[in-house]
Image 1 (cartoon, each protein chain N blue to C red):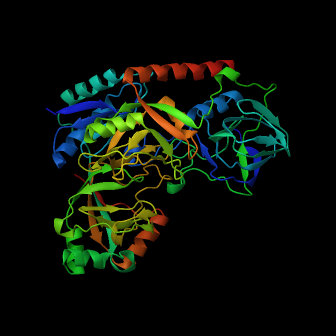
Image 2: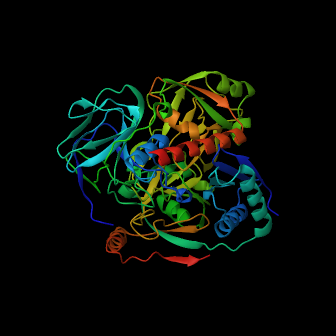
Image 3: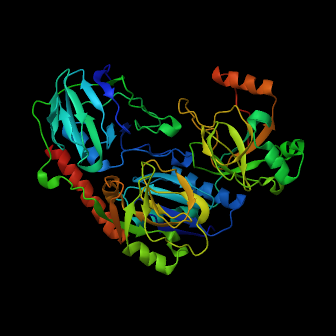
Length: 239
Length: 311
């Protein structure tokens, strides 16, 4: 059984904290709870946000009391167990290095590896998306090989292009939008992580896996054109 | 829906003029910030006075207002901060409807009290709805900017008579606010003395405060072991404390998740008070139980409903 505790977070949110280490197994339990919240919601529950070891549930206090939400959560956590949540392995094509990955040299030096090896190691794992946050569609992923961990830039850049793939500490990530940032940029993907104009605006959800695939500059431009002309199909498989 | 028509010509956009409704909800798990009006009370009242639904989008005007020329006969209401509004140079008052004729010029002068004011137009503004909301969030290019020389569209119509809010119902914006908070589960990660400091001292609002957060200055709050936690969802009004010990109240444009420890959360009905505090303004925090907070919430909703009925 899942061990969890509820706490108030202001008057409109409840924090559900799981008493466990952050692992893929815990992530599965968190997703199961979110899925049962979706299937067995209560009038007055507005939305919920999963994270590494919590789920935050927003509710309307004129429709539900804190106790009612907390009881509902405990009830769900006892009855759900291991719901099968649907997730995908999504391929993210990346053009590594040069002007697309201006900090590749820095990462190579910090990990004491040739650039070729950095690319090989970065594009090998299946990274688990633990949560989405910070910017629309930004995945917090786990699974970066320890050797590639590189400290953040001392002073953040004022502009990092959308699609930039970076490393900060022991995390790797992708910028969904042009934004300021202090990550070491090692490449760029032509994929759009967030596009509010289409019916499914987000490329990833919590629980998905990401695998980076090295591409050439020609392939990058081809994919970019295909996306613009609406004929690019995301390569993904059910996990 | 019928085709929209021009309502305003934007002669000057003002300082930080955006469109805001009650926010973009349901997409925080995908990292989409909620945005929405900083002072939801004023937004809702402005809408109710002109006969809109309370969650319609209005123009959020901050300190320095725009200059707008009416291009159709319209009914407007301005609620929130007193930024000295005028129509053709004649002063008008907040919390009351006014009718504008074609060619009338609405402008703003010196901010007298408060920071943000809401301009609602009967019929609403014609702005594309993105992910369920008309709110502007420029960082992700969501919503619409108020640009100089542009024409704003809507569904213009006028009320037959003007109405306003009773004097006793109008909030008073002081330069000093006392707000209620609920302690956060992380609060045990701060030193005992710091928790006491937090509830006893008066903080000053720093000049870098904006729609994302209100930065406060005061005696620093100390963490027992560092300021960083695993990233998790941050609520409206959450008070995060980075390693410099100076608290930040997270407001409408806050990120959905954050990795700093939070000491407390300002209750939702006190957020409008914070939103109307200018830089240099003062703030004091008072602890409250969740039961008391919910009572205040229910009373506040009743109060707004009454305006909807009387208005």
